[in-house]
Amino acid sequence: MDYRIRNATAADEQTLVELMPRLADFAVPQNRNPQDLWQGDARLLKKALTGEAPDTHTLVAENESGVAIAIAMYTLKAELISNAASAHLEALAVHPDHARQGIGKQLITACSDAARQQGAVALSLHVFANNSKARALYNNCGFDEEIIRCYKSL
Picture 1 (cartoon, rainbow, N blue to C red):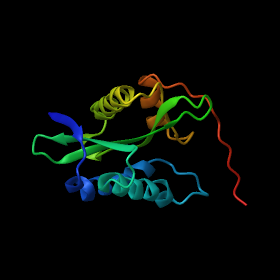
Picture 2 (picture 1 turned 180 degrees about the vertical axis):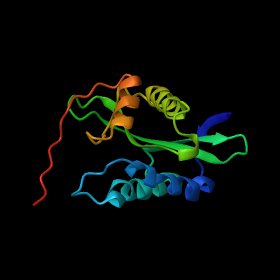
Picture 3 (picture 1 turned 90 degrees about the vertical axis):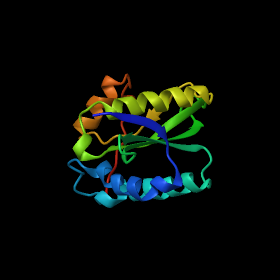
């Protein structure tokens, strides 16, 4: 399958929003609403595409027909611990028909390269502990697991 990576445009919005539920395509913890895992990212995507979130950047992988089949969205922001110039991977989603073809890894590489050119010295992300497919991808892409976030429903 041939695809290319490019910057997202406003014309991609609907297709990319339709990919967002993939962010909850794992055994979501029982006390979590799967929609909560992606609706905030969908709102951020819309703001990024309209220029309301200028530090958020969106890349897409498109197929040979020009249809977006995957999204990666990152925000330039200070690193959580060191406060160094950094980027945070907000969302990475690949259409199920194109999963496990290396597209996610290529998008992470493209985000890393773009963020580095924009002055970032690191790329961070959040992932649920039981999202084993995502964690394997991130480990394969050189991410270290550093922080454990605990959550208790009241």
